Amino acid sequence: MKYVISVAKAYKHRGKMQHKTAKKHWFVYFYDEEGKMYSEQVNWLQAVYYMTQKHHRLKMVCPDCGSVFLGLVKSVKEKVDCPYCT
Image (cartoon, rainbow, N blue to C red; front, side, top):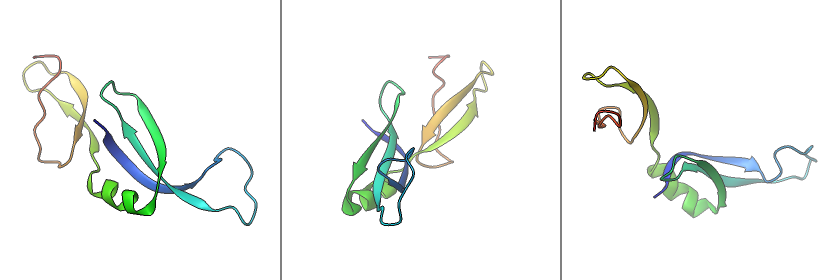
């Protein structure tokens, strides 16, 4: 499953110097199940879909054990189980 965190327009070769006729393309930035971050190029219709599927990265604190962890949620009000307690 993809946890989409951002959708943006960028140049294909971000590190190279850009010339005046260079075009930007849509990219989606996401995490996979293992927590690794990836990016891939998409067309504008897929970009619109992925914009509705975005997750937010929030630092959360477990009330039981007091540990701090990164939670990927669609809404700020959403509750996440602590990965250390369970």
